[in-house]
Amino acid sequence: MSAEKILREWKIGAYKPVYWLEGDEPYFIDKLMDYAEKNIISEAEAGFNLSVFYGRDADWTAVVNACRRYPMFAERQVVLLKEAQHMKEVDKLESYIDNPLSSTVFIVSYKEKKVDGRSKLAKLLKQKDKAELLTTKKLYDNQLPEWAGNIVKEKGLQINPKALHMLVDHIGNDLSRIENEVEKLTLNLAGKKSITEDDVERYIGVSKEFNVFELQAAIAQKDLSRSIRIIQYFEANPKAGPIQLILPSVYNFFSKLYILKSLPNPDERSAAAALGVNPYFIKDYLSAARKYDYAGVEKTLLLLHEYNLRSVGVHDGGTSDAGLMKELVVKMMC
Image 1 (cartoon, rainbow, N blue to C red):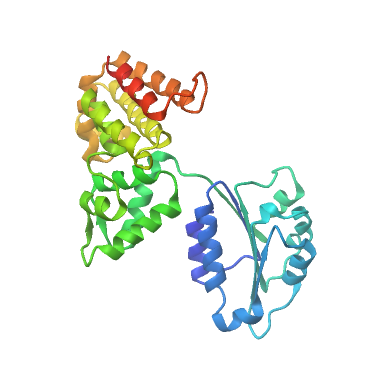
Image 2: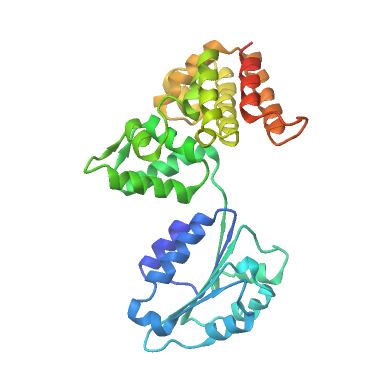
């Protein structure tokens, strides 16, 4: 079950006795916990029927006792256990999860970890009549533009493809921050319904000329002088283009270019479908395919792997990020 489906069920008043929210992506867990705390029961009922525990400080017996209480002057009560990954003897919650009260909605946040699938607790959580288990995963980098675009749509706005990629490439895989920056754009648009590159530059602080997207475009065109200028900008403004964002973005581009080189005479529509990219950008790939032959793409992918290792200190004596990037683009284009 997805976080979105759980939220839809909550909004129509359909609840399971237990929800266990675990995994690597805290954004979805936080969204559900925040909604549960504010919306499952009314503000008037919360005074008697909302209990919030934090794993680092909570004792499992106190949590279970709270869950076993009956609601006061209400149909149900809500018990939230936040940061349960820090709780001692968390497995002792088994006794309650095995026999929960239907009048209690017990929700556990277990971030950046997963319950051992071999444990009794894991087996209990898979019993659908008692519990709902949500295991979250980090989005892949190629999923971020679509996800961020949906956040924009939920605000009743539109965003052009280049502005969307500027935003995502600048922030990376931080869903909470993406949402916060979209909210900032919404507040500053002054009635406008479409987000442009100018808006992203003005309100998010991403340069239209010197960003990860533009560096990728310069590399794709084998424009060495422009690539070096952008890298020098990043050297002077480290937060604008950290190497940890640049390398995955460029690797993703050339991975798709590798697929494109294997397609027999693709047109724009079939190429976009095969690569899973917005048709707005397919001309960039087709143009890059004329600049790099098959062997050149393979060499570039190997170089990106090598320099990714060097960026974390493997086989490198401490070359600066800018130095690594300059070396890399020269080797890619020669």
